[in-house]
Image 1 (spheres, one colour):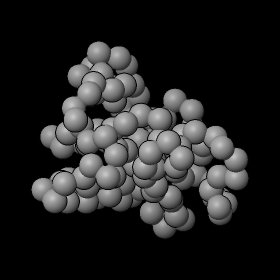
Image 2 (cartoon, helix red, strand yellow; image 1 turned 120 degrees about the horizontal axis):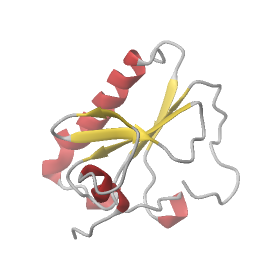
Image 3 (spheres, one colour; image 1 turned 90 degrees about the vertical axis):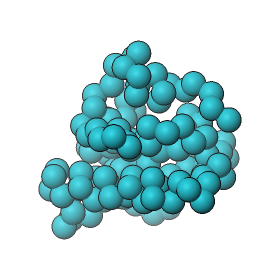
Amino acid sequence: MSQETLFTKIINREIPADIVYEDELSLAFKDINPQAPFHVLIIPKKPIATINDIALDDRELVGHLYYVAKQLATEHGFSDEGYRVVMNCNENAGQTVFHIHLHMLAGKMLGWPPYTDNAKT
């Protein structure tokens, strides 16, 4: 299931994004609707629609996304004070772009539960 998404267009440079990190496997860019002072999306370059679509062979790729989050936290000075990394799966969880992505949020005290309404992210 390989449909072109907004994120595919960002990877292919068909639409602009404020890219903060890129390597051969992944891309990270600032969220256009930030929920924290530092809010980036970390995506694999391989299109995977949802967490439910992650295959056994994708384990290292998904782990790599978390490694990139750790690197960004260190680079931007959030590793000691804390940051949140979350991945939504399907509509009821707030997924609106069907290409897996980590939301990395930092730069303020984050509450729990993270969402108390039906807002999409």
